[in-house]
Length: 208
Image: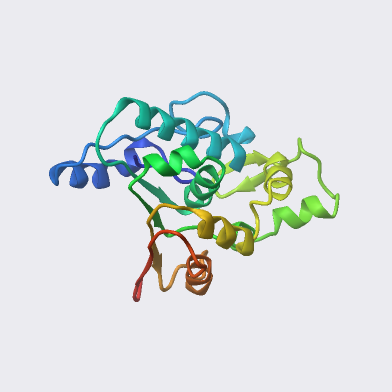
């Protein structure tokens, strides 16, 4: 299963999908709800919680319909959502054989502030915005409901990500880029370094 990151649609995973199929894997791609692409909802209503629900729903469907090994590949912001989806549902963990997190967002607040150029979560903390207020997040207008949701669901900080990763009873590999502008390699390594009941592996792509 190939989960889409923020601003990503089905076609963005086509090259990876073709390569996996060439090596004998069946792949499933989907568009998120409340997002860009063919699924229902508008991107202005996007939240991490809706991303978590989508990933959990698709994983559950895969577990019900397909036999054999099942792997989850989640990039960027979808990596954070995938970790929460699995942490919230042991049955999803038991069905999975492994998880691969690609350029994973592990400190949502840092990544958003760096990518957008302002800390939209701090805007919400200070009470200077409301849920209906619009913020430009890269190429799309998103309501500040995103910030409220991220804070209330504790999806914003590094330590919570580390704790949830440590609880996952499934092998996890993280692939980080040494020169990633939005995700610090040290944060990925820290998030993956907690004691866990299943193997953990972090691959750092140098000069990338």
